[in-house]
Length: 499
Image (cartoon, rainbow, N blue to C red; front, side):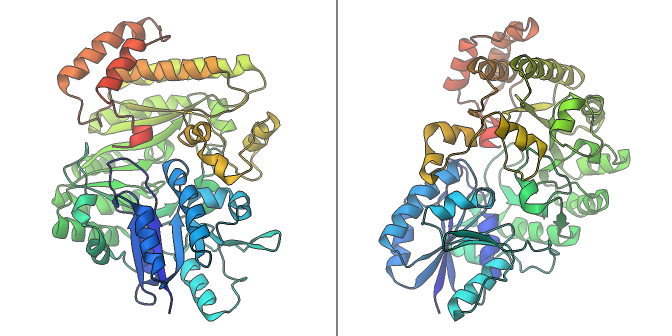
């Protein structure tokens, strides 16, 4: 029986987190097929490690998980080299990038199958079919090439999470010491990354989650989430949690139940939420969440302009007034709101695009005025290929195109695009992008992120002093002195580096 090699491409420099996505695939075949993992974040020479496994002739299947950005930068040259040296290896990709851009990947000739969404069922069924030479055409969540045709099988309904097999933490620990995955962050000395749910029940047209999960959400029970975390805390010493769910706080009942369970463990934690969802939580629930260790919550504010929220198909009931009011509300609970904003959405004229940018800059300053502790994360709008969305039709009409050859995705310009730093979008002029980036520089100077644990109090005061006048008089051009300090002090930006 052939063995399975799973690869987690490098996603950050010097920052290690348990590779939950690829570990869930390992869990799906545990006890049925032999498997091992190469982690590009941990292995000093991951390509050499992959080749050493494949050279044994025992590993027929190689699975990659691929997000846009750094993981793509490593995945493309690796898969090309591997396919040339080991042409009989069956290459299987999963993750946001291949699900969103299947044709360009399959046309490259390097990748044989794509798992389109969750692979907990699709991956083992595919391996079974390939091992037994039986049909795979009716396995859900697959994309593959039949001749010159790209075939997408039907999407599987999201399945309950509790019956899924537990992640094989102990076996991972035999390959890579789990303690080194528990990094020092703003939250704690040994921070655990954890997924407690999949999907999101909303259809924001700028979000890569939507085409994959189609406004569906399934979560593990609070009891099972607690059990997993308690196990890692007791065995390896975790003292903080980053919930990497797309939307952890969908259910107030589940959140409150988890808060009651985790409170005695005295662990700090962070997760992602929607403002209009959490604004419905009672004061008692919010107070309990904070008492249970929740220090900071990421919210997709996106825009203070209600028309832009409609354009982004934000859904729900979120408004600009609510964004400000909720930031102020969280002050009394000592929970830090981390608000993301998307600047530079498409509009019929350049004047309208610039007006939107100016509006958001002023709105962000209003948020800071009511709650200075609000963390602000800025993104320049970059299109997501959401089929049928009005917004994506607008960006295509404006002349936006994705690269047509897989290797072009790792050119310097498109690598920056994946990090949402240089979108290459026709409706944005270089001057507009400079305005966004310069405001971001000044804003981060006046309000250095609390999550940068390396920035001392003295350095914070110094950069605030340098930046304060610019912020007060709206003078954002050429902030070279702030950029110099941020470069010298290696200022950490959450939108790129997380905690």
